Image (tube, rainbow, N blue to C red; front, top):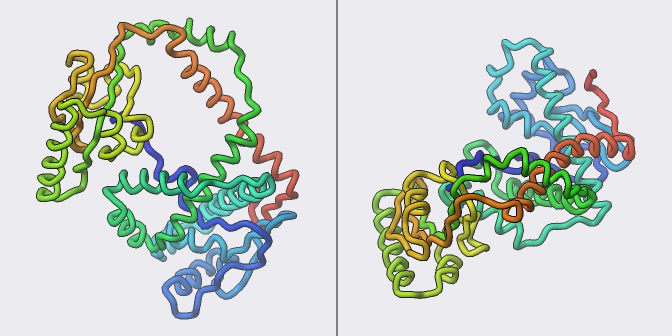
Length: 345
């Protein structure tokens, strides 16, 4: 499908919790984690497993060493060799980065809570479904998580919190952004040559085979052929999409990929989109993702201003969003009296 880089999770896998607290969980003596931090504390004293050291102080919450230890342990795979021959300053800088990132997430969650930002269960289920799909299903994803020393329930909580923060930015911060029509027209004129290229619009149904066994792929193909027969016999294509597709990125809009240029899709998918008759339904098309049934909706020689003005507006909005985010975070640090106690600037 679209050649885009996909982030594993929107804000990364962080163990985040809001509200005032004094300390996180302490490791029991003799455990793998205790031994790891006992060695580390000889280089970085505030990472000692049997002491509690405040790292960040605010009016709303406090972060201590035990809060970030799971992140440090995970990042270094619990391997003391990863730092035992490394300069102490380099280790401290690495941990400082984790502390700052953790504190920033806590800060955003605190303000999201203040603004009563929540996320629906359906949104969480949808986001988890997307993640499972990227990693070959829920079972494979769970195995991957557990191999990294994490619990799947903690990951689900992190996904939920990342959705809350995304909603917080969209609803509380970015909703204030206004884009001038003249700016949109100006960008269109500057990029006109890019828009004067043939584009195609399709709907498709995806049957995933990626990361599946050969026997499972045979079963997937058999199912896809049955659905293909339904589609070619005239059954409502959008209803078939909603019932069968395994592409979470297009399921809710009837499998639609609209106005894409050549070079945006994988070749076998693109060959159908730009060569099959408009209105036709393809035979099974195989890509590295699986089997596709593609319905060609439309093709154009290029895109008019009306076709792309909403996309350009969104591009300009995203530029403003990226510039606003650090400003917002700095402002919140002032509001909540945020102090990183051990990090030297």
